[in-house]
Length: 343
Ligand SMILES: NC(=O)C1=CN([C@@H]2O[C@H](COP(=O)(O)OP(=O)(O)OC[C@H]3O[C@@H](n4cnc5c(N)ncnc54)[C@H](OP(=O)(O)O)[C@@H]3O)[C@@H](O)[C@H]2O)C=CC1
Ligand SMILES: CC(=O)N[C@@H](CCC(=O)OP(=O)(O)O)C(=O)O
Image (cartoon, rainbow, N blue to C red; front, side, top):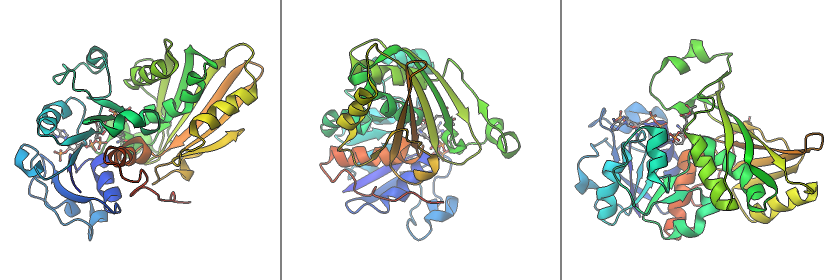
């Protein structure tokens, strides 16, 4: 099948190209950029030399997507809606890696992202594969889950689903490598600011907060409130999310174990390190795996779940390809069964 990548010059777009080069069923058709139209992608990303000699085109030429069965969009939020609508109207499946199609209630998107939603009631399905697989199978548009959100929702979903925790009293403390901020230059992420540093940002106001709450509400059937603090850490890729929740009265450690094994026991891309397990980003880099370990703090009656993923793979491009595989009835692991880079 042919697929195209809009925003191929971004980190997420380039990561899609890396993964798709290894996908047995996929041929990449158009790849787009507005600021490098006419340039070869391999000139911009030398690691792609020998795999892609294609020139970048403008996304505004809609005809070039006509023979693509699916189009990935790797644009900053607010830009996917304008191109997502005409693509979907042509019957092309859309997988957006940004936030435009992640919310069932567009007013929540508008309140947090301060952008008018111009493609309401699109029927988009939230693209966290392990939790929404059945709906993704028949979706026309998938709003691929965010990176911190993938790590945090996967960590908390079994506990929320089994009603083992107070879903209105959750704390998420997460750290991301700087590629999570995209390829654009900014003072926040340049070498002198980031090297040997670790800093929190967007405390009590990060846009991934309502995305995590939306998923936990759906899965538990109860209101959800979280305090989410993201941090930047001086590594290029990787996310580690530490999630704290208060256990309901009478919940035993074995109930917590059972919730995780029941929900994820059959999932290839979720590796359960078990009670007492310590996930590390280094075991996930370059791979589509999410590793989960959990601990019970009996003194405080809290459960603490730690998850590690690669922000650009399971947190973006890898999960987008996993969703493509689900949408087209392919082996869900096609192109994705890679061992992580180590060390
Ligand atoms: N980085 C990550 O870890 C993750 C990113 N995402 C999401 O994926 C999307 C892409 O992120 P990422 O690759 O990191 O971002 P980058 O900043 O690295 O890339 C952005 C891409 O969008 C294009 N672009 C930028 N501004 C515009 C514009 N005004 N109009 C059209 N195209 C534009 C750029 O291309 P050009 O300038 O060449 O036209 C480039 O291809 C975002 O929505 C992001 O939130 C999701 C999960 C994780
Ligand atoms: C380190 C860093 O800056 N990370 C980004 C999140 C990346 C991501 O998943 O963003 P979207 O939800 O927009 O797709 C941030 O905090 O905004």
